[in-house]
Image (cartoon, rainbow, N blue to C red; front, top):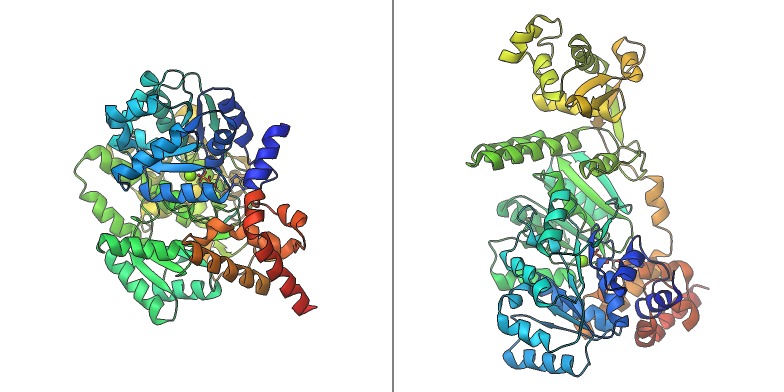
Length: 596
Ligand code: ADP
Ligand code: MG
């Protein structure tokens, strides 16, 4: 790490190491190059433009779609002693003029703006009068119609290059698909940008899927096991949100609902209380989440099946931004899949319908197989992962296995008897005895395996094939259009030498990894958390902005007793040391004295 970068990282942000890719990105920005970076939520994208902002001579302009988040980011920058401001529709004319005069006088290094500003020529001219060092486009996927959150306002960003040909542009997104990536680069007219695609593996997230039986009771049980922790519960409908939220409240859990049926001020208020740790739990439809950077969300529960892996991944990704262990629980029932299918049938556009169907079927197979969750999620984003992550129900033997040899043999035999030349859907059609012309043409309706699995639904056989793929009993030959082939291991199962087990989900038990994460004194942690809350209330800031949970945890483990050792804790820079050091050091000293 270069000495100067290392110093700024430590002094201003309080971190001793860069997260993956941060240093490359920052170096490129400092050299005046364009950058495109796809990094997962919590990957540390903000630092990639904030750190250069403090070193470059002029002003860094950050475009961000979320007005609510803008104020938070400016507050957070101030907490680190970085001078920042924002201009959006919440400011009066006078306030905006004041920001501009501060910019002109060189009193601000970072300016956050909403994209709609850029559609007015006037604003471009005002920017022209300033010395600009870089543009950083946050949530850059909003510029692409292929993305999950297209915003027409973002299209005006295409003009930046033409208006400011000499100002480098960097683009950041947590959307992983390649199509969106190319779209962003083209539309922003990035010039041979540094391209970064970080791993989308979120090591700190523990994935677990449990059969849904009594959903409210199951959610309550989970919440009771994580007292005082901040969490999101997602439900599909307003009614379900209201229902779960009141159930939790009746059982003494501090929670509030969030959905489109509430008035704007109500929704904002609930979100604010959640952000500021004044309530533990928010029960919400998927309308909630975009634009909240709260770093200490310790769990995300899905009370209903999400529509796609992409949305499941984005939603679960809101937990654990601070890198501390966080839980993702999905309560799964086949009935939910049926409900989504019902909606899909009513979609008029055939292409959209087909896409929705594919998305759902991948989601179902994710929920039904016993292969390492992480392996499955990452393979969805075209990332290879060996499995055995140790941080999911599957890798921790939480799943009770039952014998599935006979079903496996049905699939394997259908593959073998058709010469290992056909893909997944055709094989399933044979096993289920589908009456298709293609099957008749090949005479495959005469095979002994034809129709042996007609009593089970398609999804069952899809899941079975996923299990066989995940356990390397079969493989997909992409060169032969996805034909399934049987491996040596698969032959072992087919010819009865080996057995094959599949998942039957069962009661959860605590994993070794989970136990590891819970080191440090819980009583001290609670004292520090309350201190943080008290300070946050006074300042009107969300507590995680003062210190992250990770920083508090580290205090509990390292027990700093002077300013130097306090500064060594991750997330504490010079300004935070000055502002909060003595308060927290006193609290730790008191605690230690009392316990000695
Ligand atoms: P993203 O925008 O990519 O989702 P953020 O910029 O919000 O991520 O950062 C996520 C968290 O990681 C924040 O709490 C931030 O303070 C922390 N973080 C960023 N860079 C580092 C680093 N080098 N070391 C430790 N923590 C970091
Ligand atoms: Mg971000």
